[in-house]
Image 1: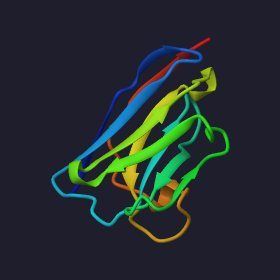
Image 2: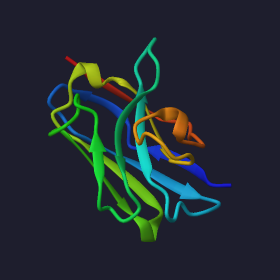
Image 3: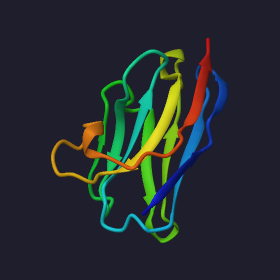
Amino acid sequence: QVQLVESGGGLVQAGGSLRLSCAASGRTFSGYRMGWFRQPPGKEREFVASISWSVATTYYADSVKGRFTISRDNAKNTVYLQMNSLKPEDTAVYYCAAQRYSGSVNDPGNFGPWGQGTQVTVSS
């Protein structure tokens, strides 16, 4: 079974940037759409961005459009999330996952398994 490990989180000031990575081990995520989600403190997990296997299609939550960029390196089994112009409301634990079930590409219920996440904290 594939295991996903997120990294790259940290504490950054508003307006700063971070690049998150999600590395797969145990099995490749060949052919899968991959997604980034986040869970702010006290809130439910929410969609951030997703990318198809071929990199042909990407989707973003309205709240991050124009600031975040999702990409993937299939040869390295790694997915990235470049986050620019960070805002305090971006503070959350960020997770990546593969889309296991057909349906909406922004529904966390269609994705899994989940890694342990990486904490992103944006100070004002």
